[in-house]
Length: 86
Image (cartoon, rainbow, N blue to C red):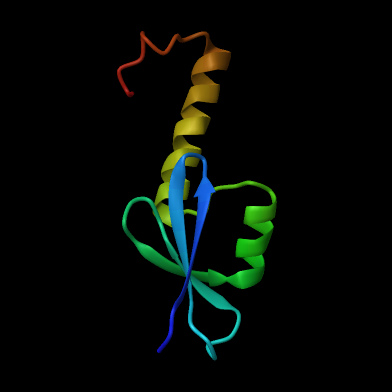
């Protein structure tokens, strides 16, 4: 099988998109954590057009959890230096 490699610069990290001819609309994405996930090509195109990073669900959930914690700390008046979770 031939694989087409496309390298895109996203938020300072390089993501690799592998497309395999004949499979259809699914693409394999290499996440910065090392996992390979399969996503719909339309989803990939939308995220790339918006300048968003392509990531696996585990990295996405960790990023969202960290963002939520930072927002809660901000609105509760806790400074980042005072918190032991990070």
